[in-house]
Image (cartoon, rainbow, N blue to C red; front, side, top):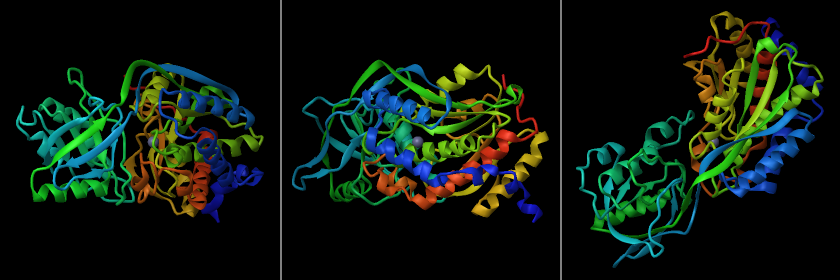
Length: 441
Ligand SMILES: [Zn+2]
């Protein structure tokens, strides 16, 4: 029975009136139904912040407010792709975030295929002039979603490399593990000095279709992508707190990101993360027992176009002592592993968290926690972190597609995620050990 002792220190579990899974699911259902898509910097994201403030106040959190920050705003326009000639046919395409625009009537140009990012990198300068680059890959589903880092480079960096080599446009195979006609959007980057070109993602199956067509001979593509870009816009982080008893013990930062891509309703990315982490804080709030540390729930803005909210938070709050940061941004799949980044004197906290999560089927990892997307910049300053790794096997089937909708959220899985965060939060918010690490310069 000794191994279960940490659970006895979790009165929150018993005090909850509403099952935590229901709190989490109700947040996801409400946000995706009443707000819908939440593209960063747009009117819809502003509406999401209003919704968030009302919801968090109604839930009973203290100090609920918005912290605005400036950011550029990209909006999707028309988008279509069609093979021209004897085998003429339409292909399912979507623009990548921050894609440049074609003329309104589109571009009609030959396609050059590359089988990897390395192959595109190796293309001779100027060799893509007057062409549409097409980059493929073979990302497959894994529990830890590891392929997204490696193959995602094609989306993050491929367009700028193609532009630098003279390409007029680029289409990539969607960074996803599905086989559907739903293309995956996602942000791309343009280093200083590189003029954005039209950049789209074909659905996985349309990409395979284009490969088969190219195997038969040269292909000319008619591509129309007409997004718009404004340099000055606004987003914001929504903050809510449970004030702690001991200000010197530091803040526990927990949350997810409020913005989503515009194609779906962002149910898995990242309403589910917000639902699970906020449910954990709500259970603590409802216990009526004030935690030792202030628990700060943040629903970050503008994560998708490039971590604007996470960076703005780290900048604005770098002077405050943070005991620990944790975030959920990998959908609604079950937690299966936990990673730590704790000070040397907090080894027992690690052991208590491991023991508390074990009944949920979660095992410890030797990998050091770095904090998920939005809390990453804060953790990089030298803040302790616990990362709960969720099962990503199905995540990249839906990620950034029109199929990221409420019906894909498994209630039982989401309840397990909320339960895991409740257990972690109860321990780290009350631990007598010092969790504050020396700051990195
Ligand atoms: Zn996300």
